[in-house]
Image (cartoon, rainbow, N blue to C red; front, side):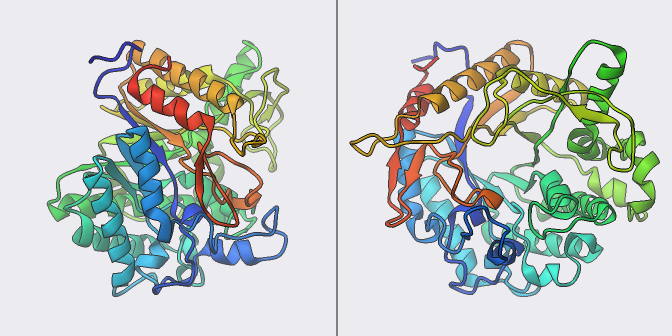
Length: 446
């Protein structure tokens, strides 16, 4: 039967996770530490003092995750590979046990009728490469090309959809400017260097895929931001544009062969370690852009300074907020999709992450009735439908996240999953939102 909710019959519905957040088995089968192992074990870095050593134990319980996906009738599963598990030294010969794990996962997904969407990097850089300078060091981009090529050789015939990396803004700026994420630095020059080398690594990986002769589609996942202006005064509208530079155009302009934004280069160009042909490598053609969206802020103009190089400041908003203290603004998802589709046109966009953390409380029967999450998802997926009606080439939606997991610097104090994970047994338990998403995928929830 044809869908009745306004989405195309071939619209792709999926769920997303990432390696460090769910796999666990941190020191097993040849895996070496990543920067998130180091960071999470450092006192005071994680809100509840816990780590991803065990996480959701998906390294052993991946079959449970696939059963959850099967129960949804999800069309795709977006997951990331632990570089440290595949290439423990960050260079050289791969770890066969790590490769075998991902091959088993991909085979089982395909057998279940679920399309594997493989992401090469979701922030967990091998610590051995960090010791050599990490993303501040150009060599890391070359090592990423080597790692990507290993994955193409060993699993490339099994995967049709690839992404190079997730939210490089977070890896560069939360990791190197604010220190909230691994490796925990607070250095503007380091952050800018990391940004360039992350993009260069992406370009090298795409080029290697093209040279491999493999068939498939390739993209990158960003977490763009286009804050709305607090007022329609010209100075606030201009501030809204400037506020989007570091999260959006800093990444998309180079990918589209436009170089880095002029405003950014006027202030930080001396920091950028650009060498001959770098921008050409970064601009390798890609098939799709993944958009991660959680919230939209409002901004107004403010004096420019060293601490505030973009001359903007956030203002109070009226919207309800999630447990992350992020405002709930479904229309912002439509707006950012339209902004990207009109400014950097590409034949396909995907919402690769969207979801919300709420204080999930189980009832006396142990069941989580997360109506707030259901309302959040319903409104944001309706915004996707509105974007489609306005001509955005949106091809799919991936919910974040399939299961509750290690939420980076928040540890296990924030829950995004549509299934909970018992921290004693690691057993999965669907929440009410799981059944909402199952109905949504079937075309009955909107």
